[in-house]
Image (cartoon, rainbow, N blue to C red; front, side, top):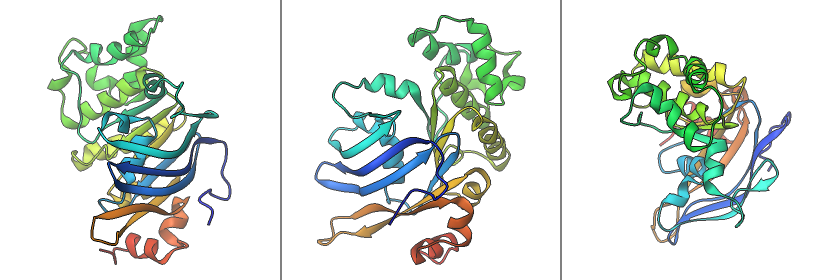
Length: 267
């Protein structure tokens, strides 16, 4: 069964038989997928099916979890990002991440953007980078007169767009978003979704969402993950059921379990 959409353009990230374990527990196994460049790809599925685990594997965030181990290959730009000679910090610079809860640094709005760029050796015009990043994240107009104010003084939705701007500022190629709207109200959610539509002109975006309507609104492609009970009752192991154009996943999926999930007849 192929997990590469028929019309797959240029591949940005490829997962080749990826299995991720926490200690002896396999959280998700045997994932194959080609994530295309310049598109929004959504991961959907019930809680505990491994979608956030797979997302975090795409920039080695799981390295920070004791006992987490990956088998298989994650290929970015022709290189396996888990190869021994690959610098995880550089991987995370090129593949940025926005988390579920907005987490601005306890610094000024300006420093939230400038800090990471400076650490990564940015030598250009910092004022220009800060403005460009905030504009791309659609939060410049709300921030431009208070760049010296704390990022923590912004509303939740503005903080999340500040975190998107912070990710953009290190000039990554990919932005990962782990349920970026789950802590936000509907109006802020809409603004983040509009921001994603703009960002995909410059970045490849992968988003985990529990909100199916959100996947329909923002994603070009959707991957449905599910989990099945392991014999012996030691929890559930996640797996990729189906990966295709979003419209196909929601309107004409190949698998019955996908159909059951997207129509709400599930779990």
